[in-house]
Amino acid sequence: MLEKLKNHYKDAFVLGYTVDLKNLYQWYVSDEGITFGLDIKKISERERSLLSTLFTPIEQRTIQMNEEQKSWFNFLFGSQDSVIINKNYQTCRFIHFQTNKPITEPTDFSEALQAMFPYTINILWENDRHGIVIDTHFDQKEDFQVNFEEISDTITTDFYITIRFFIGQVYPFHKGLKEDFLWEKTCFNKSLQFLSKRTTFRLHEVLPYIILEELNPLLKQKLTDSVLQELHSDKELLDTVKVFLESNLNVSLAAKKLYMHRNSLQYRIDKFIEKTGIDIKHFQGAITTYLAIINQEQFLDS
Image 1 (cartoon, helix red, strand yellow):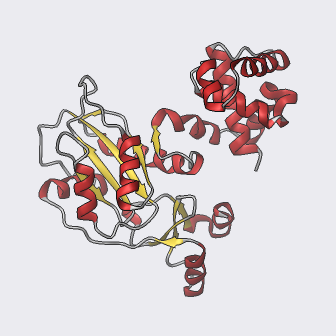
Image 2 (cartoon, helix red, strand yellow):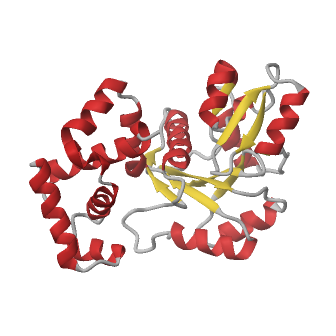
Image 3 (tube, helix red, strand yellow):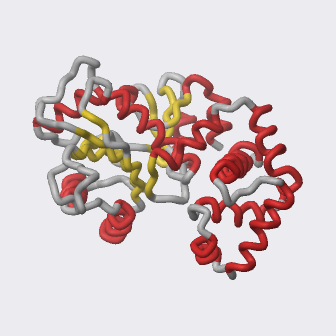
């Protein structure tokens, strides 16, 4: 459906919410959780009414911010020369989040999210569904690690919503931080598009999809044809191999995920190796095969 809208509206269609364009576009969320906008000058009232029956409109809301939050908001979404008022930051990471329903009480929600961190965080709201956690205290060497899978489960239980997180990289505090933020925002939107069944995403998980998306159609077809060969239509086998690869090539772990006897899984792995000549028990063969499988799933089957 979104591809049809993109083809119909062309340049008037944008994927992913952008604060800079918030008043120039009408924003919607699909059932899959993907946010998109349409230029308000290019759609009629009748089209808006129809789109609102097919997708969920996003409401804009003004939320009170303290001085530090205002400073961050201006830096990330304002003019290029905006500065952060606190100069003591050494590192920073951004955690983007999106909910499947509007947050009607953002203050209560922010307090609940803050309570799950052992230190102070800044929370910025883009609209009633999208926000950013700005973490300037995270230290990878510390014993405490925030478990976003648990946070997602807790918030789902307490607020009766589904929330998805994109956990960004840790960056040194530098002038290019805004570009890092915008890049990860793009990666979050791609994660929602390609990994919609998950609730937490990380950069390394979505990068293969972003790289594959940029390949020309001929190369995409060649990748699948040359690697998967006659097995390209054996979905059950390919699904099994994919789980094995995503289990760090651990047969026991993959068998547990698949509710399959270890020997049965090993048989399928050996069958794939025999048919393709690619040893997926080693890194080079594994990564090539993984790219070929997700390439077929996302870019060829449709």
